Every structure is written in structure tokens, then in C-alpha cells.
Length: 348
Image (cartoon, rainbow, N blue to C red; front, side, top):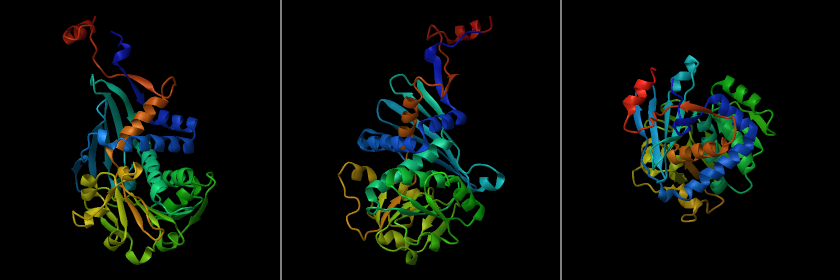
């Protein structure tokens, strides 16, 4: 059999290698460095190709492709969202992603992104809160204690200085799970019996529920002034978490309006309702929080540039390490015009 040449091999980061890499770097340090990578790419937002993700919806979930390019590197993520999966012992979200060289089209990295999506979502949430949350915030309510919740809590601790987390989920097992998982991270963690109890005295509220429905996790009378809401659970048409009246009282920040107006909390509002793109805040083109009494809302649905940043970060971190394997993905004949000859010689 013919051996593949080095230029035909593509580094692949498996789930095991991703977990090993994160543990090697340290979870909090990893999230901080990843947030820095995302922030740097948001500050060069105008260089990127941008399009709403390509979604295939069914009555049980959604499968999506999320592409972008900065002109030098092309990237995409495949991701699904199936809330019913947890009842069948499966993940709600699974994903993988790829970067490629624009000049040749050759892949540069293939990676799992189920774990990496949780990490980049948490890093993005906390990064945005650094710009929008009230000064000296130290208490966060975490409503929805599923697969993403611990990453969110640790990211807000690492980047925003949160030291107390108040947990609530309609599934008491999920809350107990999150409580135990967070016990080693120098956070004061409180299990709450209701969302009302969880948001008591909170500076930041993160909502991260999974049901694909027009839900009302927070009602208008529950939300006081001077807080930051990190709404990450609503991420497709027909799926929301916040009462419309909260949106009307909030200064709203989004990633990419053409996508968020279809998938985010603001799908409840008129198409011309004013929102601010978060990259504009990071570059100083727009204001973030301007008043201590404001409600700021990050209506986050996830965007391809965040995945691009995460894959680029991983590609750099695996260099000269064993946290990947080489995949023989590309046919690479000695003569580029003789693919059949390569095939024929493989049987010798």
C-alpha cells in the first residue's frame, strides 16, 4: 500500500484529545485565552464573510452548517440541536468543525466541537459580559443546569470575577449535578427552588434552557433594573426564554442581526427594533452599558466567527504536541493529473 505524504495528512482532534488539551492548559486559563482569540477576531469583524447559518429544521430538532472566512482561512461547523435527545441518553448538541487554507482548499484541521462549542459559548458569554455587566458584579443566576451550565459558571468566574452562583432547573437532578461539578472551583454555589429565588440579588442572569418552544423562563415583573442578562438558550425559530416586555425594557446586543432576528429572543420584536452588534462595542464604535440602572441583554445565538476563532486557537495549541492524530483524508498523487494511476498502484 502507498503511504500518504505529509501534506496529505490532516490533524484531527478527537474528544479525548480535546479534553486532554484543556486539562493540560487548565480550564480557566483555556477559557481566558480562547476569549482573547474571539475578541481579537470580533475586532476585525469587517474582514469576515458573514451569512446566517444554513439550517435544516424538523419537528424534533435542527441540523446546521455555520461557515465563514477571513479571506485567508475558511471554516465551518456542523452542529445539531435536538432537545429530545437527553431523554434518550444522547447529547442535545453535537458538533465537529474544519478549517481550510483558502489558497489551496486543503484542510488545516478537523476537530470535534461538542466540547469545544460549550467552551467557546462560555468564553463568548463572559467576554461580552466584561463589556456589558454592572461594575463589580459578583453574583450570577444560572437558570438551566444542563450540559452548558458549568462551563458558563466557570467562564464568568475566570473572566468577570463572579464568586457566587445561584442554580435553578426544573430538573432537580440537573441542579444537583451542576452543584457537585462546581464544588472544586472556588465558587459559592447555591441550589434554588425556583427561578425567582435564583435571580435574587443577582447582577447577571444566564438563561440556558433546551426546550424548543416559545417559553417564558423570566417574566417582566421578575427582572429589576441594573442587571445584565445573558440569554443563550433561544437559538432557533420558535424557541425563546424571555417575556417580550423584558426585551422592550432592555438595551439589546447581538452577534449578527440577520441571524438573531430569526433565531434569537428578538424574533418576538419588530424587524426594525434597534439592536447593537457586539463587535461595535468591542471596537469602540458603539456604547455598551451607559447607565448603572440599565438592563443590558446579550441575545446570543452563536455565530460562525466564534467557531472559526475556536478552531484557529486549537490549531495553534496542538502544534508540537501529541494532542491530535494525523488523518489520511486527501488523495495526493505524485502527478496531480494522475489520480487513477495512484489508485492503480495502490493494488500492487
